[in-house]
Image (cartoon, rainbow, N blue to C red; front, side):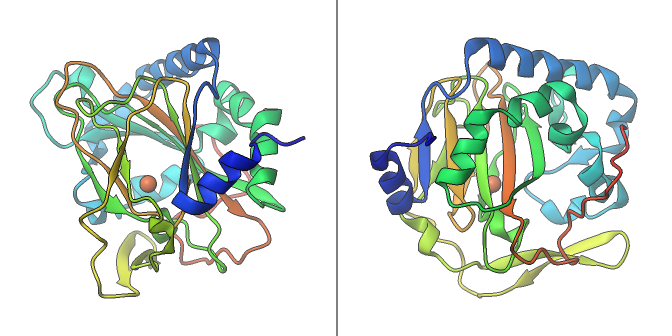
Length: 271
Ligand code: FE2
């Protein structure tokens, strides 16, 4: 079985991204939304030690961040101009392994077919995130390439970005450069000892600042993002959330270095 038709495959090859409308049903969207709210409630006691700055990834190089590879952890917005209940930036990074609802969603046949269509021989889902992009305070995410964070040799990571809310210009939709997957990888986020990570420069040229296209999509749309594709999102200045669920998959046959920040332990521990 194939999930993508030949026109969709060609569009992904050409652009480095592809929006698939109605990938998730309204019932699936609702169950993911409710499950995320459940985890925010569960993790409320951790919230004051997990400030997450989307503008300064290096500040995340600490034990809490690194351990989230094998947990369901909560990360907060650094901008503190709203009530405590609205400051959650995201949940990460092992919901797809530890939570039955997220796991059930990502292990469905439609994902398996999609992975095969995209050329994965041994698809390995390594990371999931639930992003809240809160009204008025949800921060921007600067342009980046996902291969910087989930590096393999050869490059293999693909991002699967599911809109839980409609994503618009107002609430901080994705932006990407059509054909930008041909850009070489500029940097890698690598471990340095136990608790720290830093960026290793691979190519000194900055990522392009021009040529981005807004990906305004309806809730339920799945956006595929090639690992070298420069993409970003603006801050949410609207009065509504822009929630999204993301899954990142690498090729199991590729080399996955021990210097990557995310190292999967065989026995995941539930928070
Ligand atoms: Fe990304």
